[in-house]
Image 1 (cartoon, rainbow, N blue to C red):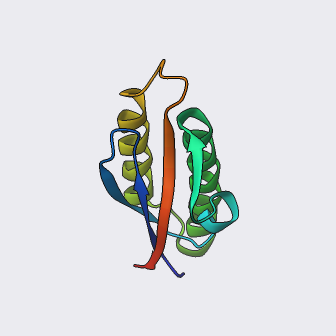
Image 2: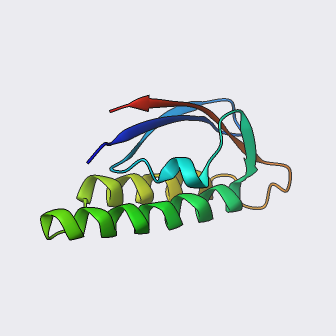
Length: 96
C-alpha cells in the first residue's frame, strides 16, 4: 500500500511533515491550498478513517502510525482554537 508524507504550514508559520498510510489524503487535501484549521482537521480525520479501513482490509488491523498522526494533528490544531483567520497550508506531497 503506497504511503505518503504531506507537509503543512501551521498558522504560526511552523511546518510539519505528516504521515498517511494511503494516497487517499490527496482526495481530501490539495496542494498550495489553505484550509481553516477546523476544516483541515475534519479532512485529515476523514482521510485517516478511510486509510485505516484500507489497511485493515489488507492486513487485518488499523495503522497505529496513522492514528498517532491524527492525534498529533488534532493536538497541534487545538493551539489555534478560537482564531477565526487561522489557516493550514498544504505545501507538498512526498513519497514515504
